[in-house]
Image (tube, rainbow, N blue to C red; front, side, top):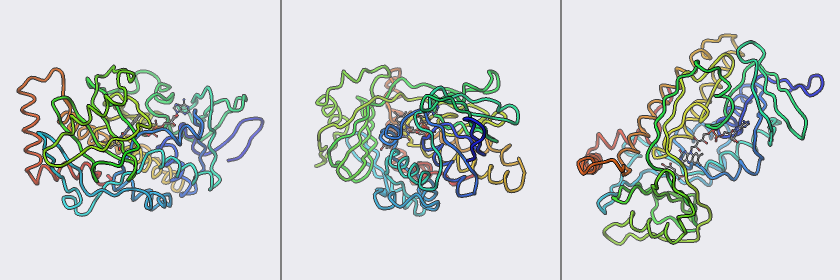
Length: 399
Ligand code: FAD
Ligand code: DHB
């Protein structure tokens, strides 16, 4: 990064947002010898502690390891070869490893990925402006894009060749694109997830997705000591209606199974409610502004795809910038949106399907409920159907 007169800075790629998308993009660009600067609204501590996703696809893990930010992930991540689907008080294991020819998922919290990427960027001399206020993007419809923001009480302008909008669903990049350019595809679901982090060893070695007449429940984990559990709740639910003992009571009911399985309780360390939504904008680019990750699309959490899609987007964006700077060709930049959207829509389909199969919908008739159980029964008895779930869950091949 070179300082120009006054408080104007200059870089090649200006990145808005230090979530997984922005940080990984900056890291991949650095490996290609391309400069970038990240402008982030929140503080470092906040982004490094924000509890979110936890399931990494095989391809995401491989990318982090191959690009040198996977040391701690390899040491601390929990590799899972299967998941369990539970309904009618019985568990059914999907052996993803066997069904996909040796692929797995790794449980490693999103904020740990963020920590690893922040420390790699800073160690390599990368610049991240934390706690940036009044962030705005400009000039991307011409040849002189810039990001304006306030830091330490001083206004700054970062001029760049391109802007990467990695500022999540509620960011400013997508709304800065003139109206009429983007088409939005949107679906909301009539429920949300109440998620807890608990000081309780996970009651199962693998994730358990439970369909129950009282609603969906998911058992996941962050380590051998810390459990992460979710309950389907009404979309406008108030967390104050859920004291800890009510949460555990409900989890016991929804995970109940024949045999000697037992849910281990422990102190709840954190709890929150996340809405379920599917959203995509097309195209994911306008002029010299490229959207990546949640800024362009969100998925309901059931398929565990949000973070992985963000990684897949920036992999393509970094390739496209690298091609532009090495050959002058804009071909891959022009293809960026179309190439991302093929994967995005497959992840949308999978996430919608998992969500529809596993949740109770208030509007469902007894016919629908029997159909849902029949679908689970078919799925867990058919190698073809289990293979389809497994190859989507561990992550479809790149491109
Ligand atoms: P984000 O992680 O949202 O990062 C965007 C960054 O931009 C943030 O750091 C934000 O502070 C910053 N920013 C925003 N506005 C501005 C601005 N104006 N200027 C500068 N910076 C700005 N996915 C799953 O697969 N499983 C889960 O269990 C799961 N749980 C989730 C729980 C919650 C509460 C949320 C919100 C999401 C969850 N997701 C989950 C989705 C997953 O976490 C996201 O898909 C992933 O974070 C996307 O990464 P991103 O970098 O695109 O966006
Ligand atoms: C987790 C989140 C998910 O959305 C999911 O499908 C599986 C696991 C988790 O937070 O561990």
